[in-house]
Length: 326
Ligand code: G3I
Image (cartoon, rainbow, N blue to C red; front, side):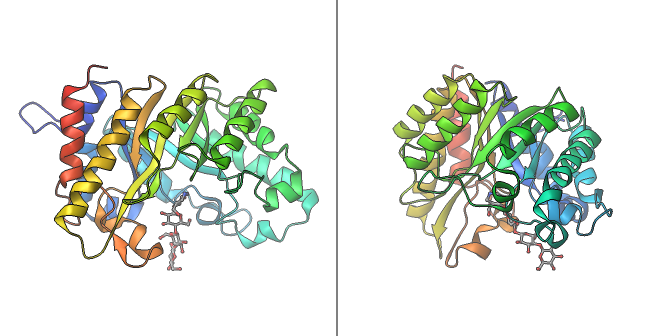
């Protein structure tokens, strides 16, 4: 649902006119319980990422028990409002249920394959994009030492992408990570990881650059542009998947203006790279952001405030989208 006739156009309409999806990470509870959350989501965004609902632990806390209700709420809402869904995430080292983390290594491959086949199969044709593997590389560029690496060896990534492709051949399959947005040892390692997977004919279609950044010390736009260019050179689609630009609290006008520049600069980098097709913020508004809970003393990281009102960052996106030529 884009803005109906006469209704104020939301960001999604401006962005879609530039071939870009603007998205938000979504939680089922506020979507069910807060009309303003739902209205804002439908008005401003054309893509929803399942924030936690499709992680392994919330989805299957015990063997054989699946809790799809949360994800179904998000997927149903998206279908009713002409929105794409990004399924987050099939393979991650966090939020792994105890019955999996305690399973013998010999059982991990069948557990993981069955998980992927069941989840991606259930949403075949309804979840267009998957974060198949999340955060498999450490900050120094080495493979992250996870139960998946220990149990299945380095081929677990290829196995995961192949199972996801078997479950839904129409889905776009992404690798997703943080701290690999600019030019650094981690982004170098992610580039080579993806190149090697593609060289092995593994069905990887895109890469997610999470973009969880502080307002001071964010990746340089030129570095992000160079990183995107080399990833695009592999034939990959690129999404900015989890953007938030955290501010020291209490918030000042200067900090909000600086935040607007960061959002605007990185949107421009995405618009300048044809392979970059989505910019997604990690939450619908500041009221439901993970940032204050994880980075004490910071917050106000998104483009809409606690009352879903546009902030200077929102207006920066409107301005840039309005003059974009793509
Ligand atoms: O749902 C339970 C609730 O029943 C329980 O009472 C409560 C207290 O323990 O916990 C609730 O679960 C929490 C969940 O968020 C839902 O609110 C988990 O403890 C908490 O760990 C979880 O945090 C999420 C975190 O990933 C870990 O999964 C954040 O909301 C989520 O924003 C964050 O998102 C990650 C991406 O998936 C990957 N990239 C980094 C990003 C930020 O860490």
